[in-house]
Length: 365
Image (cartoon, rainbow, N blue to C red; front, side):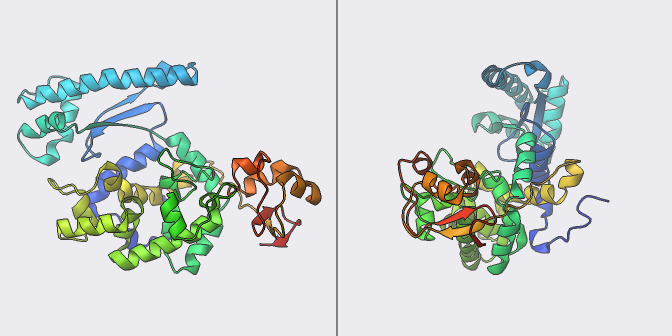
């Protein structure tokens, strides 16, 4: 069967021709290139790939620390090599080796002249991207635990099912995720936004890490953004850049066409992450749709089954487990919203909290 043949495609999320190269770049990062592959590319136009270096054999047998150190040092040294090749081309010299020929070919779409090469150096437009094939495979496997529930919730809000794939690029469906800037959960809500959407955050509970509560908040956010911005590409982009930031970009560019905004040759209202967020999302749609073709034999984890118990009073997690006749560890993967302090028994599970328990131990969800 051809890739994606069995899954109906929503025209609202078709890939604009202007974005096809950028989407393909991210599909390759997600599926073709692994953690030991480094891609050297143009920051403004990632589809312009200058070099690809697979370090697998060079780091084989190394421990995690040694491998990371080698990769860091390699990127630093090879960046100088690529920059030198770009500088040679900026002086109008004919390509004299395979690297220079590739760079010249990749830059042809920007037209003739040498200034485009000089601009890479003066504006720091050379960037590296490490592949995440292994990470993406694990994300697809994990997604099965809650994706059917997430799809059901989005359907209740009248939202396209495609939007449920956003956690692939937000958090890799890591249910315990915390980012360096303070975002949490599979939907990566920041505290302020989470509180706006009535998610509880305190010393005992962080509902950003509850896949069900946070999904309802994400659905409300996306529905509101769509109402404000008018198109799904812009609403998706706002998930990274904020609805007001996207509205400001629309006003500046004089268009709502996401492809025109992202691929504009001179004006860049977004930074790298926001500019690539929608193309990454489109890539995630394709990868999930074609997962069995791209990752033969991949097995998605089954949906988690659980019952619910509403806490009638505060109680330690060990006491709850003992009363239910369950090991504490059986409750952990069902209740990511409970803080470390609760699991360490420094705090009780609060009164009123809805605890997820294995099937047969509570009220059916």
